[in-house]
Length: 309
Figure: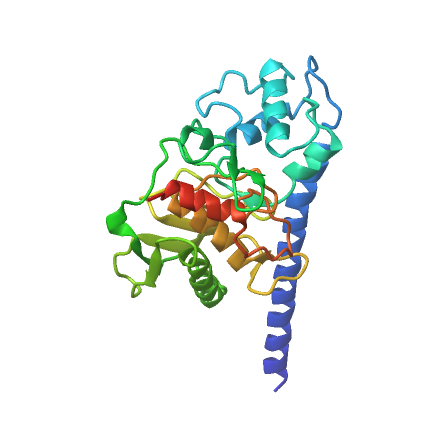
């Protein structure tokens, strides 16, 4: 009896140690990131400060630098960084200061989608998607956008199939299936699309799963605390959750909501880019604990403009 008890106690202590180590590593990752950005607060153009190259890489990842620009990713606060920060601040409707003020740092720390914010094609390129258009009661500013080239599904593919195939084992698989099913229905209710789950292992238009780190799509995940998920425009069909995040279908203040992120990523799968409307599903960031599942008028107008009759 005693050896069995000793074995169970040892196993429990090892499990407890592993959990504490994981929590500590996660907190250390997020803490270092926050401390790193705070150390650059109020740095201005003309200075050379260690770490500014990381800010530039962050801004490049989300579309504020050309993706092939590697010559200017130094620790110099140069014209390129000044311009990129101003574009970032304008996109998120922050005060346009051109430096890392408190509001900009705070915004950069909010967990977000891994899809870039800025593309070469804007909503103004689409004839039916003007910057101002009329509703029944009033004029409303549109903030939705489309990726470069305005990719979309052809009318012959409005009945889309989806299936699940993860690169890593995850305890949230069933929650993910339920969350995605509900998220698909939200888009189906406002568009011409219908969505049907295909049997496991079969071919489907959309493939959804949990992945971590470098998982073969040239868009590696960064561990807990920043990029939550990413997906690809039509007709690619890939939608990946970052398995290192703390996911839930009923999130507490430190968890991310599976369905909220699914609704957002499905918008990308259908051809929408990020919106500048902070209330829209297609807004790039979402804080932990927030449940944000309902499509807004901006989201609906965007999908209608993209698939106009």
